[in-house]
Length: 172
Length: 106
Image (cartoon, rainbow over all chains, first blue to last red; front, side):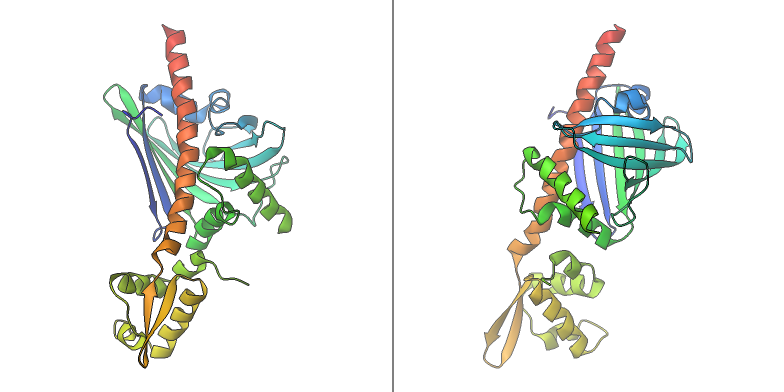
């Protein structure tokens, strides 16, 4: 990672929020496009080594993004993001849930509200993402899914985390 | 079922208890003075915190003192660190994409 770029990651366990602030070496409009256009989202959203696949994208208030994060072995993990409020190129809010390939939301897994704001920083842009879980127990569940496997802090273990999430889905 | 630490911190009274005993070990009676609740209620919270291994009991004469298990609290932060790395990776890919697009424009 480029250490000259601002990066904050703050968890507020009392408010059930995660606040993630990151600066990018591009103007606000371009960064906005990368967040809101499927062909661009597909190129960065899933953390390595996973890739992103969009099934449908309708970026408008009430619209949704139905996507999968795909493991190198082909295993797919589906997500459903519904866009609630959009003010180009300032911010959008959305609800983010786990789903299946048909777009049916998994109500047993935590759903989160996202507020994504885009701010000018000279020639750069800062994106602030505030992820709010409905309750602390939702945040707990997300955290716990990662923790119960006793994972070490490496990205290589991400597939395990996703596997855990999938196991949780199957058990419920 | 083994209780988990997230269940423990879900309750505001238990969070307040954690904050108090983080400063010094305390007896249930001393803790109860800080809350508008019964000593029994505090004992119940302490039992849950003990089952989660977030606090540990220490006998001093007739009194039982409750102490915070710092290491256990760190577990929460450990996972958050994991989550942070996922976001870092995601953003690095966005950095690359932005740089590619900017080059194509020139």
